[in-house]
Image 1 (tube, rainbow, N blue to C red):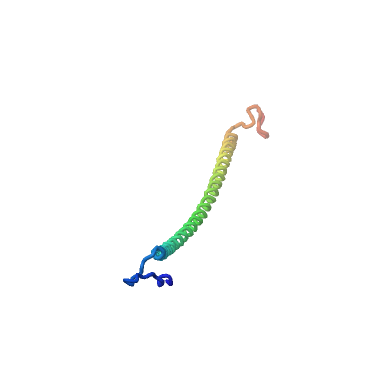
Image 2 (image 1 turned 30 degrees about the horizontal axis):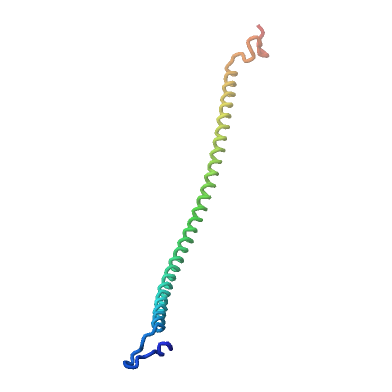
Length: 134
């Protein structure tokens, strides 16, 4: 601003005479003012972006927490599925053993039933002990 006071004036009119240096100086001051305006606008944009970034980080953190919870739940469900598959496999094995045991028992019962229905279980040539001789 000191430089703006040291002006060359026209002797007849008393008006300042613009010089090339003075024109460049004023243009420089205008550029500085323009840059200050741009800086203010840029700082506003930075602040807005900072707010948006914080919001997005919060959303991301919330989503990550939800993902972690769902992953934990999924892992638990997978573990339960494996337990159920093992239970079904063991139940099928037990059913198979029961079926085989039932068939074996049924065969033994039928053999015993036929043995007791046979009037001569030891064959026709053998007589029971204590039976009268013919």
